[in-house]
Amino acid sequence: MRRVVALLLLLCSAATVPALAVCRVRPQEHVVLYGASDDPDVLVWDSRFRLRDYEGGTFDQMKALLPHATLARAGTRALVESCVSNFVQSKYDTSPDDAVGIVITLGPLRGQRGWVLGSAVRSDVTRRRHRR
Image 1 (cartoon, rainbow, N blue to C red):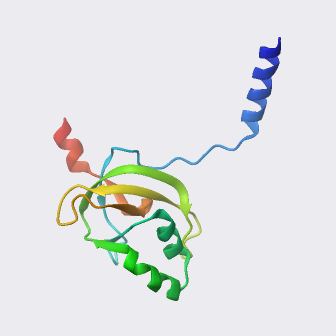
Image 2: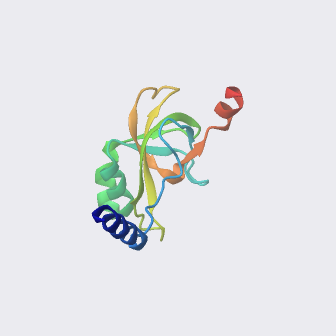
């Protein structure tokens, strides 16, 4: 009887909890980095907290944080290591963005780990074609 009551309480409490947001990308997914159309290069940050502070900061704060980022050229290929959904709130956008932990897999920055915005990652279509 206690188990039934406990199960009912658990089900009722689960029904009132809002659904957690889910990242668009998953660990071990191959991605390509692309920024905005007017500036397609991507800043790769040494911590997700600096990424968040940069996106929401003032001009002076943003300038002070830049030494903690590396500029990756548009089209840089990477592997997703982790993702924190809705972690970054940009002062220029109303909806939050994901912070995606990546490791760069090709090019001069190969092996570098860092954090990028979820909006800066695209699924690597060429990897999917070659897997088949």
